[in-house]
Image (cartoon, rainbow, N blue to C red; front, side):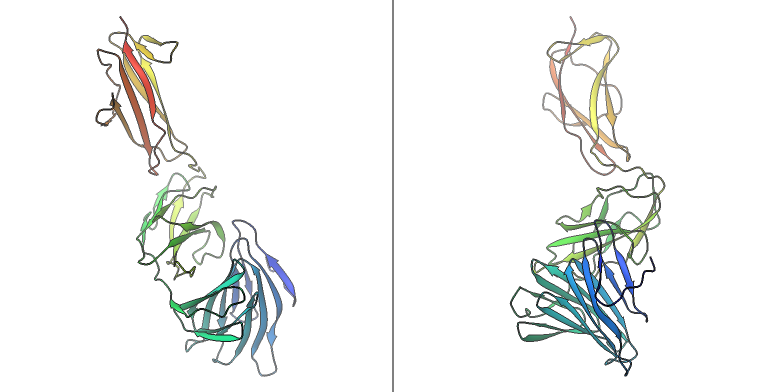
Length: 336
C-alpha cells in the first residue's frame, strides 16, 4: 500500500486479489485478479494535459479519469495492437473498462467516450457502448452494454452464521453469462472472491471468506464478451468465518434393538425404528425426505416406522444453500 510507481513500472495481481493505482489527481486505475499492467508513462505536460500510456499485458483494468475540461486528457490504453483513448464527458469524468481476451481486446465505456483503434481503423465508442477487437482485426461495430442485474438475495444488512449464503439475482435479457464479485468494501476495490461464466442466476462462493461485512455485486456479460453495468454492491454480514463447502450427508441408524446384516441391510427388532442423521458443514438442514420402495417422497420429522416386510429405503437431505445430498439407499427388514 502507498508504493509509488515510476514510468515503465509494472503491477501484477494474483488470484482473489485486486489493486488500485491512484494518480496525482482523482483519476485511478483498478485491476482485478490475475491482471498485469505496465505504466509506460504518466504525467502532465506544460499545458496541464494528462498524458500517459497504460499497457495491459493480461487481465482487466478499469480506468476512471477526472479532468476539468474535455481536452485535458491524452491517455492511451494499449492491449496488443489495440489502442483505446478515453475522453471525459460533460461531467468531467470518463470510465472505461479494458480487458485482454484471447489475444484480442474488449472495451466498455461507462462514462465519457473512447476512441478505439486497431488495424488502422478508429471507431468512436459512446457512453453505454462497447466493442471487441480480434487480434489483427479492426474494432467491431459498437453495441449497447447490458443493464445492471437486480440483486435478490440475501437481503441488504442481513446476518448469516456462515460466510457463503446463496447469492441470487434476476436474469438480464440477452445476457450470456454473469460475473459475481465479493469484496471487503462498497466500491469493490478490495476483492475477496470472483467467478466468471456463470450461466445460472445464483451462485455460492467456493472459497473461504472472513467474518465481516461482505459486499457483493453481479455484472451481466453479452455473447460477444462485453460486460454490462455492474450492479450496485449490496452488503450482508457473516457473523462467523464458517464456510459451507459441501452438500450435506445422510446416514440411517437403528433406534432400538437390531443389527446390520453382512450384506449391509438393517434388521430391525419389533418396537424399534429408524433414525436419520444429517451432517452439514455450516448452513444447516433445510429438509429431509424419505421414500419406501420408490414410492412418494415424504418429509421426515422424526423416527421412521419399519414396514412389516422387507423394503428399500431412500433418504436425501437438503441444506440451507439448496444443495442436496447424494441419495442413501438401504435395505430394511423386520427381524423374525
